[in-house]
Length: 401
Image (cartoon, rainbow, N blue to C red; front, side, top):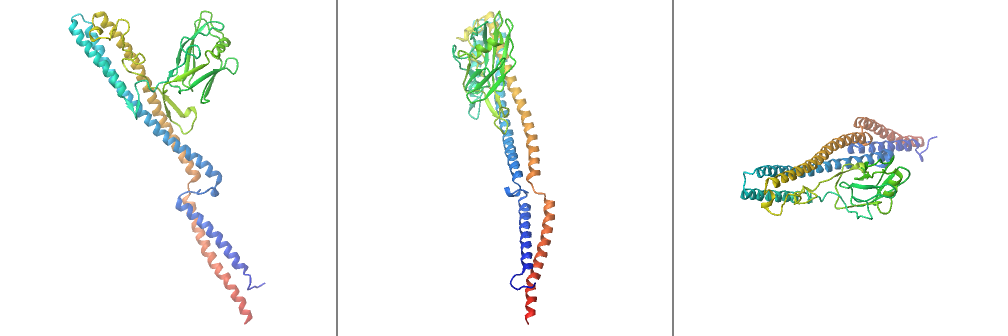
């Protein structure tokens, strides 16, 4: 049927031309943006996956920078420790010199005066070494056990419900500042839970033999303690009963705790790393412990190495300080090596995640270029067909002449 009121062919041509124009618009949008997915309507599932990957990529990229800052922090502390090492070596050299009885009292006093100055310089270096406003070598970034005897688990506590045992040590150097509580979820199990709900469980706890020393290491929380059994040993059940009793079931961590580095994109324990910067001050017992003790008298320069015996005691004290510093430098060196591997691992992760996200979200320029050419041809053909369809009504009018 021929009609001059309704031009079905023209309507059909217009509809197809509009569809082609819409497709052309989407192709041009993807080509101009470089993305296959520009909005959720393009691919809702793909957009969700892509955004999660972007969060991981950006988080890991920042974690790399965090780890590199951590390395810089450690290098700052280690550089200062290197100078402290040099000072200790000089102090030991002076001690060996003073131990020789060819030196009189005046000469030994002069040596003692230099030793006092060197000890003061160690303290100055320790107090002055900081990174972004944080003191590194004064113990400010080391957690301490702030528990109270009789209400918390502290060194020296007796665990004597049945069979004697005592707490030999408590290490919280890398733990967060908070209170931890010991509980038991079953036979041979011991759980440590922090006030922030972080927790770790040790299983398979067995009886302790006579005079046995055993360490309970909650490594994920940075807490460990050592128990030494008495002459009669200690059953696992009685040990757990004592450790979860009201008198010993809490470990209170005070101080500022170890430096926690965010080396991952998420909030799990595996995404953080604790680095402890221990005290290396000379005149502090928790540092290098160059204090008056035994036959070493730091009260006056004339008494430090006043005799062969005093000088030898001083040398022993310096040797202990060097050993302590060696250990603390080694700990930081190990942490730095770990951080370097962390940076490498995160770099590979960022690279792979970026490639995966690109495959999901980025546009395939070659395929889109082909679609654009196809749509251009369809647009031209659709325009020509629509023009022809619009002319058909004119042909019907010729029948009325």
